[in-house]
Image (cartoon, rainbow, N blue to C red; front, top):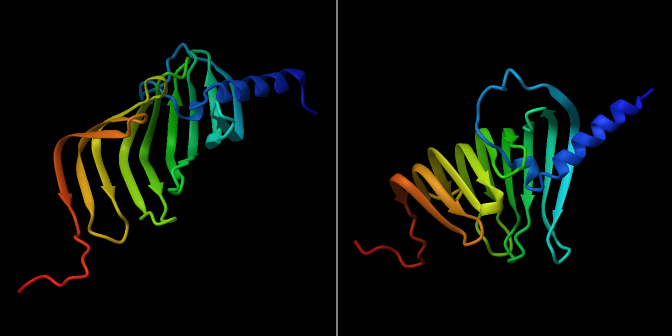
Length: 194
């Protein structure tokens, strides 16, 4: 039998996770839990759909399990986020084994190999982004990492690598901060001159 307290705790956690709109994705600093922090709720198999003002889905997030603590942080595992493109391109899929969001969901940390992939479709080539950690600042439309980054088109030699990244999700401008290297495969029907 499920107790009222258990139901309220679970409902509270689900509301807290849903209230994280980018929520299953927003985190602060990566590190150990505060020794003062107490577990206040847990949930498994969480599904969140964030809607845009026009009523269309912005993204759908799935989290295998989440734990909320008294310090306001929510820790989660096995994050998968499908971000709707609405440009004709296939939707992006962001995955991370672990994440943490702060109390007001203004910062989300993802770690242990973060991947963002756009599959091929509608005339678009597949595209992949990989890094070890990623910090999202949803209210500011910013994404950062200090770790090595790699952008590539699967099945081609088109690859850009570097260290550190600053990106704006609204303007779609990405700055790779240092040690940038690129390889680009030229597609041409004309054979190269000998």
